[in-house]
Image (tube, rainbow, N blue to C red; front, side, top):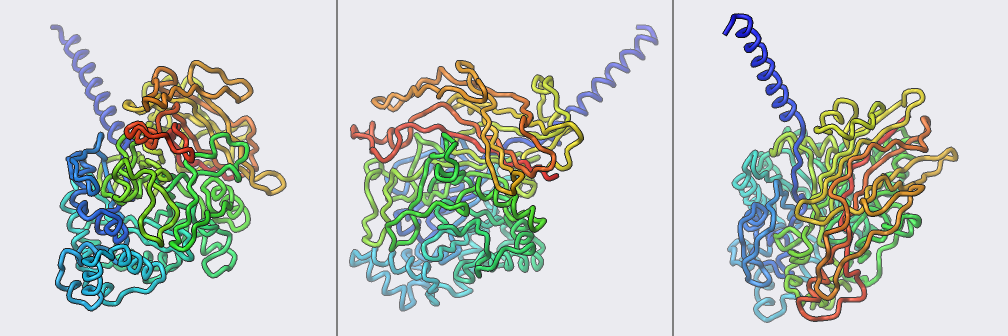
Length: 609
């Protein structure tokens, strides 16, 4: 080999090594898609324990999420998740956390109290439902049982919880996030939040979780988060859920004292609540037909049962109860206050109280263990004080999808903070959304769409401002079907904006539909429903495997505030109630649809002039 050839080979090898190094660096800096649940209850939650989950504690919940078999609390059968999760936050209620679990296992500190002895006697007499009613009635009425709510007991149970979180955490493989649920329910209206900590269990064990027994207002929670964050050098995220049954409270125009929202309130809410749970076992909170009458897909897994044990009525439908109207309301506040209190990302999670995630229709264990058997799907709780809710009212939903650089506590928490997360109803649709001013049609053909997206635009959860002259924002979108799920029906962009008269408006654009149909003036025919109600099956021969599109807002006005998020729908598949009905050879309940179109919601991208 000549000297010239050796030099050429060395150059080529060097270039190859350099290219590989660049590719590796790009791969390391580009977030990966992780799937998890940030809202799962175990037998440490008092309601979960009283409603049948006596055995699946945090140990069982972590094992199940990691793909190991456990014993179902209701049936005693061996159960296993189909696909393990990448991360899990066990969000047991802070109010009396672990007390029934320990009390009825003979914990001497609890069983030796006067109230504990009385409860144990009542259970032995077959009056467990009365114990449940009294126990939870006291919590809802903010009457803490002093013997059960001492600092010593609360700290002991919390330290057991945090130690288990550290024990099961495997950075890079399976992440356990430390947290709990703050469960405020004024007048039966849902103001619940899941609190996520950025720290290890060891650090979290230094404080005691803040509960609604300490303060039932969101402002009280945020104040505690601020003080605790500073004292222990940690951080938190508060995640509201089930706005659909908040009775007009979750996204209100006034604070907890009825005073108009101020800029300070808005900044505090933005600081602690960058993410909202959009879909879960108690229904979907994206929107409602009464709020979005032109949206043909607005009536999806609608759930309006109030949480009060004394009220059989339905939750009202107001702009303060649903996510799309809250996002619109936020644009108005930003215009008037200069700060948007409702500028949040979207996730899904389960809120299952069985210790088993509830994301799969065919593997649905119900919300609580008394609904864990298929034959209980049409039964109601035995307690006379229970709400008028049946097993078929609950949804097999949902999942939190996170674009994180690593599967670690630090990186998952960072993704939540920057809002690069999205919601699904349980399906694992891979969804990327980028917004920018300079995307070209050819960018949809690139092999690595993320590289182009991050270089030329911003990801979901981000902001665009001050449009360049003559340009409208472009959304570069990629949606890939769940490899083990149904094909895709359509991809839509949901736009919210403030019009010239200062009024909030919404518009839905059909951006892509599966290949057997066409878009004409933004409209298309409904996708075929192939669900066989006799066999509880469907044909996965229609629909699309993937959508990759560049959409530019045809109605863009540079001086108009707006947000955009993407909604992706699958073709119809059997709902969990149909699977149960066929398994039992019973007629399907008329109160529910036998099929369902699973979906994903991206987090919004905001435009501010």
